[in-house]
Length: 120
Image 1: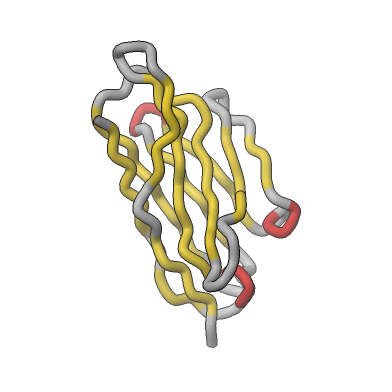
Image 2: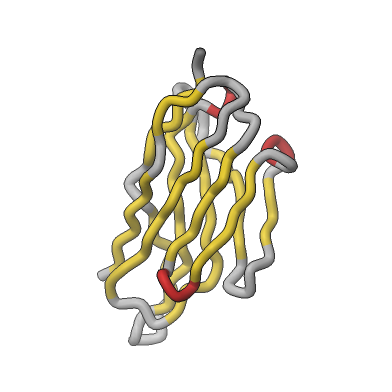
């Protein structure tokens, strides 16, 4: 069994910053890509950013230059540093990880979500 626990959400003013964390634990042999999605009220879940096991990031256009994804492989943790935040960044943020277990099976796991609200 694998668990992802994401945290760090909260209320921030426009132009402010916030850092999300997501730690994976359980029956993990290795982790390939890790990433973040978000879902705003009344909207579909959308991809935000992904980082490979080697540390190469990719971003959705709407967060380029504002958000930075990183990971600590020793801690099985992925981070999302968000800066210059906008009201449209308000959403529940979900982390995910492509995990290979000790039976060589790879599955994508999700965190429970953390609420981010950008408002003055």
